[in-house]
Length: 243
Image (tube, rainbow, N blue to C red; front, side):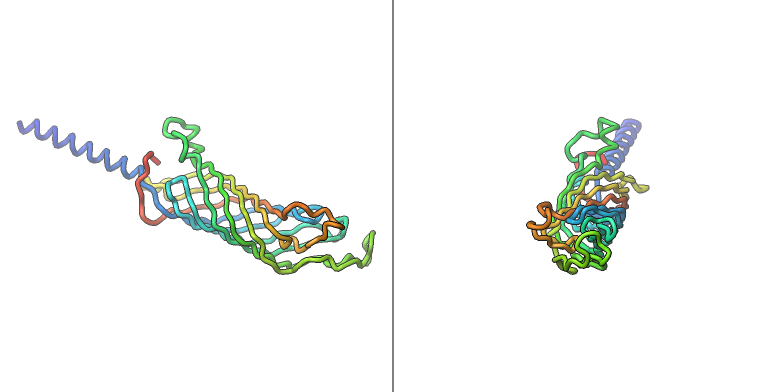
């Protein structure tokens, strides 16, 4: 009889430990913060865009491990054109900052990645969209053609503002590579992201060209290619699948 009770007790302990281990593996932190940086490229009213830098910070709330909503802030420099090679001798440098609220959904929310090594590796793949404001600050801009310009030397001023605010819509495509801590929780992530940012208005390059003189029909945009890190924190919540 004693041996029977001992076996039952031992089995109960093993089952309890298994349940606790599974439960821990299915919990996730509700919050994450991230930082990162990369290069950007502009497409505006000047003939050719330019490459420069962007740094960013994010804070996200995780509705599930794979569906998030949060805030993103950016700071950096945007540039384009060339006073020498641009057909109109135009060039700008914009020391910009921006903030947006955004949402993202990852592949892991929609697929059974537990049964596939490939899907498990790709479960952090995501797409997202946001809306916010970009603050434009021209630290350099050509308002008048130089005296040595091939056409219309001294022409100007090119219309536009040196400082402005524009509506900003970022579209994100990227992937998170999750890293567990010593307790089995997802605590860190390495993030690789491509973001296309559309602005509404003519502030990104500082030129507000009349369509009668320039082809000016597309919104000013810039694209950021970045790498960053995330840290997960806060209260934990249960999730239906193992993480």
